[in-house]
Amino acid sequence: MKIYTRRGDGGETDLRLGVRTGKDHPRVEACGAVDELNSCLGWARSQGLDPDNDRLLARIQGDLFVIGADLATAGEDDRDRRLPADAAQFMEAAIDRMDAQLAPLKRFILPGGSPSAAALHVARAVCRRAERAVVALRRSETVDHAITAYLNRLSDLLFVMARDQNRLAGRPDEPLPSDA
Image 1 (cartoon, rainbow, N blue to C red):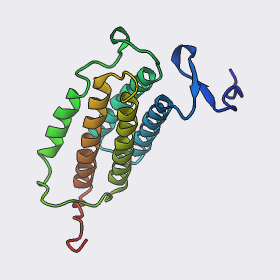
Image 2 (image 1 turned 180 degrees about the horizontal axis):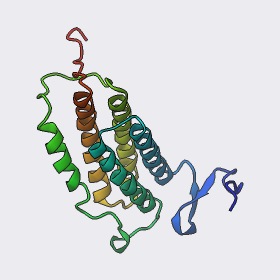
Image 3 (image 1 turned 180 degrees about the vertical axis):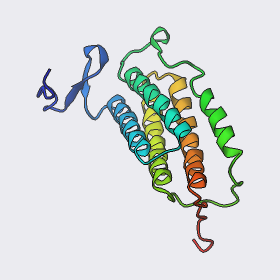
């Protein structure tokens, strides 16, 4: 199988099930944002995460492939949903577990710290962009609510996970300067 087909040279691409659409369509934008997020998680995993956090992100990367496939299916109905409605709930337990180990936040913090935490902060920002792209798609087409809930929860998890990675590295959160 060749990597290039030349079929997209005119600005269109294939969705699942062979539907052709413009590369600037909101559905393609949402798929691309989720793909970018998945790549950011792969980069974060290469930065030496705690083994528990690494396993959690591996699971999430698999879920993001399912989300991408769901988003790439135009005209999807309820029978075709592949992401369980409660898919975001396992992240809440992870957030609560990590957050219990962290100092309470009293001020905004700057993204950064250890290389793994900084990569997770980048992934969090990309996750918010993916969420916005999916919400924009939902304004004109049917999108499973479980996807937006999942992305919303994932950005929260990535924030807490970044703080947890800094804690494990002995790097305190850097508060936003008070004069900012």
